[in-house]
Length: 579
Ligand SMILES: Nc1ncnc2c1ncn2[C@@H]1O[C@H](COP(=O)(O)OP(=O)(O)OP(=O)(O)O)[C@@H](O)[C@H]1O
Image 1 (cartoon, rainbow, N blue to C red):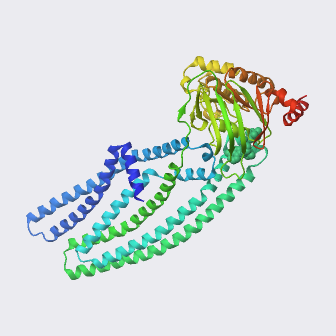
Image 2: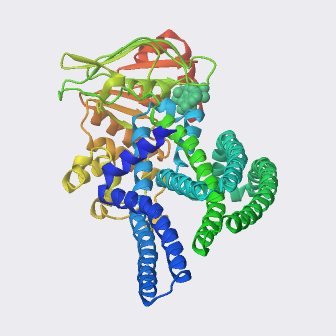
Image 3: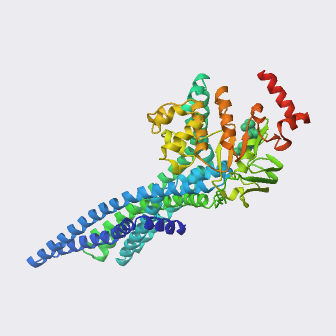
C-alpha cells in the first residue's frame, strides 16, 4: 500500500516540485493551526474568566488578536492548498493518460486485442492519480490530528472518552473497509461488461454504424441489450449499496450515542476536577472535532483503500510484458529486402487452435509475391507476422537487407503498408498522407507526388483541408479514403511493400490502376500483395495459396495452373463469375 504513496509523491514531485512542496506544507500546517486555535481559545476564556485587572484584559485582547490571526492563517492555508492542488489535478490526469498511452504503444498487438488486457487498461484508466496522493495526505493529517486530540483528552484525565472515541474509530473502519472491498470487487468483475456497454453505446451514436442500425431498425434491439447489461450491473451494485447503507445507518446511530455519552462524561469529569471554563470549552471542542474527524478519516481511508486497489491495476497494466519490436533499424539499401520464414506457427491468445501452421517461405530481394486463399485462411495474420506486429511462438522470420539480417519482430520502420482497415484520420489531408513518413509533413512537393501516384490529384491544392464533417470538414467516400491510404505508402520509401486487400472500395477502373501502381511502386522492392482478385495475382513473380493456415501451393500463375490444384479451381471459378 505504501508503494502508492512513494510512487505518486515521486511522480508529482518530478513534474511540479513547487506545487508539491506547497501542497505538502499547507496540508501538514492544518494540524498545528488547528491545535493552536484550540489552545488559544482555552487561554482566551481562562484569561477572561480570571480577569481582575486592566492588565489581564489587555492580555485577553492580545490573545484574541492572536486567535483571529490563527483563524485567518487557517483560511489562507486552505486557499493556498486549493491553489496548489488545481495544477496537480491536471498533472495527475495528464500523467496517467500519458503513461497508459506510452505503455499501450509498447505492447504486442496480440495483447492489445486480448480482452483481459483491454479490461485491465480500462481499470487502470479509472485510477484518480492525484486523488490517491491527496487521500494519503488527508489520512496522514487526520491520523495526526486525531492522535493529538486523543493525547489532549488523556492529558486532562478523560481516558474513558478517548477509549470510547477509539472504539468508534475501529467500528467505522471495519464497516467502511467491507463496503469498499465489495465495491471494488464488483467493479473488477464488471470491467468486461462495462466495455461491452461502452461498445453498444458507441454503436448507437457513431456515424459509421448509425446508418445500418437505422436501416435495419436495430436500435430497439441494441438498446434492449444495453439496458439488460446496465440493469444486471446496477442490480449487483445496488444489492451491495443497500447492505452498505444499512450498516452505515446502524453505525451512525451507535456513533451518535457515543457522542452524547462522551459529552455527558466530559461534563461529569469537568465538574469533579474543578477545571476552569477554558479547559471545558476546549475539551468540548476536542470531542466535537473528533466526532467530525472520525467519519472523515474513515471515509478518506476507505477512498484510499479503493484507490490503492485501482493503483494495483494501474501498475499491473504498466508492468505487462512489453514488445521487443522497434529496437533495430535496417540499413538503407535499394537492393530490396529478403524475407526468410522457417517453420512458422501462430496462435491467437484465447484461441484453441493454431491459425498458421508450419509456414516455410523465402521471398527474394525485389520479388513480388501474392498471398491468396479463402476468407479466414490466415493471409492477414501472416502479413502482420511478416511485419513483426505479431510475435510468433514457433519458428523464425528474418528480414535481411544488404547482407544484414534481423528478426522481423525486432525491426523498426522497415516496411510500407496499406492495410485492409487503414486509419481514417479525421484531420487535414496533409496529415493523412504524412502518416506514411511524418518527416515529409510540410514537404508539399512530396505529398503531391504521393497523391498523384495514388490517382488522387484532385486534392493537391487542398492539402490543409480538414476531413470529416464531425469536425467541420469534407466527407470522403470509401474509395477516396482508400486512395489516401495508398498515397501514404507512396510517400514512404522502405524496401518492403505490403498491400493487404487495398482495393476493395475502388471501382474496377480505379482498382486496375491501383494494381498497376502497386507493381510500379514496388519496382525493384520486395512486395507482398494479399488479394482475392486472382487476375491481379497473375502478374506477380510467385503466388502462395493458403488454406486453413497452411501453404498448400506455390509458384507462378502458369506453374500453378499446370498443377490443376486449388489455385486453378479458384481461378476458373472467378473467371466464370466475371466472364
Ligand atoms: N485478433 C484476432 N484474434 C483471434 N483470432 C483472430 C484474430 N484475427 C483473426 N483471427 C482469426 O484467424 C483466422 C485467420 O484470419 P485472417 O484475418 O488472417 O484471415 P484472412 O485470410 O486474411 O481472411 P480474409 O480473406 O477474410 O481477410 C480467422 O479464423 C480469424 O477468425
